[in-house]
Length: 145
Image 1 (tube, one colour):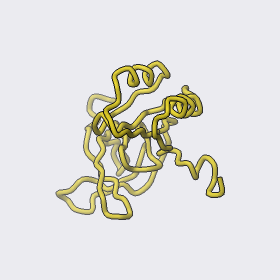
Image 2 (cartoon, helix red, strand yellow):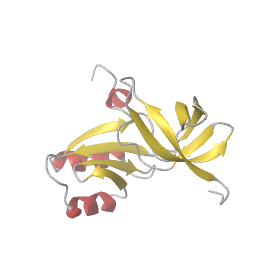
Image 3 (cartoon, one colour):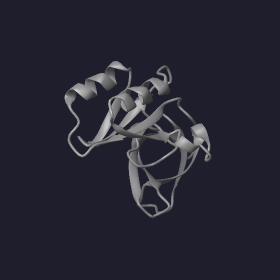
Image 4 (cartoon, rainbow, N blue to C red):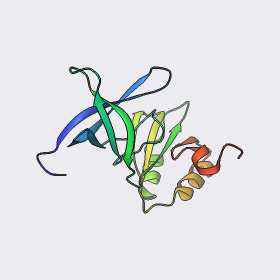
């Protein structure tokens, strides 16, 4: 990113009215490149370029649509107990990074070069509760799967 590119917050709103704010680079003309991992929003990942517009001059720009996918995918894991540092090291060894809302709810960034199935297989074999967030299960396998 150019040094003059400004980092701002953008809002992603769910149908139920809940709001998640993500850091993004302001690319100008209502486009933003996401700079962190969504913990709750679906169908967006770090690095995606989105369109957003301010609905209130004092508020954050509000997500409208994805303009360009980054190639990153997002998987989320959850647990009733804290995840261990060993698990986080395993995730890194797969070539992924992550951001945690806390030590029991974590979003994993799966880079384009990493096979999504390898991450899914590792999580399943480790008996970790997880979900596809971007792409969603339905996008991968359809609604009949």
